[in-house]
Image (cartoon, rainbow, N blue to C red; front, side):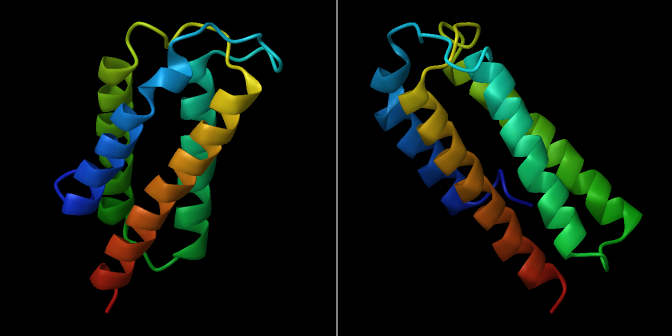
Length: 115
């Protein structure tokens, strides 16, 4: 659905280009780790996606959940060295932006599905 598209590859490239943001341990301004924040914000975005698209079937919703699992796996692989560090404000801003872009990918794909 999303992870096999060019937009997702570009999004992963965007993340790798900004890995420098994650090199230094965060100050822990909100108590979350990098991966916890990715997981929380991505889950929130997917809840919004599903809420905005009540016409999605059970099967389509399951596909979205599997895609999110694949995305989290990719994030864990890319951020393996820093995923457990406390997130700082700059990292939080980036993660918020990144998860919003993931939502945009889903929005686009779902719009193609329901046509």
